[in-house]
Image (cartoon, rainbow, N blue to C red; front, top):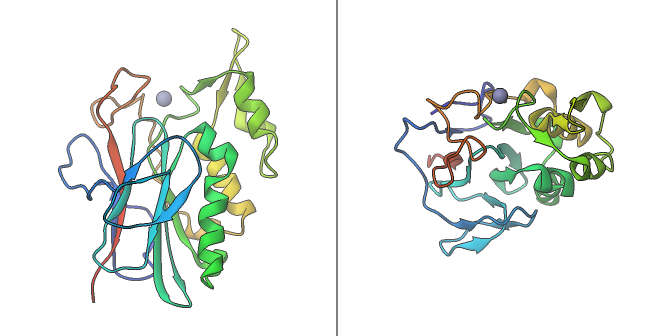
Length: 212
Ligand SMILES: [Zn+2]
């Protein structure tokens, strides 16, 4: 498992699996490329993000090119963690904003959140059409440098860079950014890639508050 490159704010097990990892949390989410997030429970819920304050309750998202995002911080009611699934739809419709808003609603300060974007399809490979850029340009964090025009009239979109720009725009600190930059399509020996032909296999981004 690849660990975020940032100190955990409290005892955590967290990271991003590869094809070589067996460990995984229970499935609690039916992902739908939306931006609903839920407090974790044992039943499967439909949405693209989970959060919990319960020690020992592992939560995660499954991805193969989309970005997994992990968040960890202290609220008024103690440690809080979240796992979010962000493809371009989730990213442009604000799933990270919703996750940070949930943390703030519990008294957390965004600047103190430890956070990490995991392996996902990189700007080297993520070819998108105009509808993706149209959606991304609505975001206050958008910069034109996050897309590179291609000769075929499409663009290469920097999904992890867009999420990192959003995070900073939401008040998260670059000092607490533990993102693990790998392109899932560039490294087929380590990662599942939907665009690379893996229609079934998924890796996890997951996180668990360790019991005291
Ligand atoms: Zn690549």
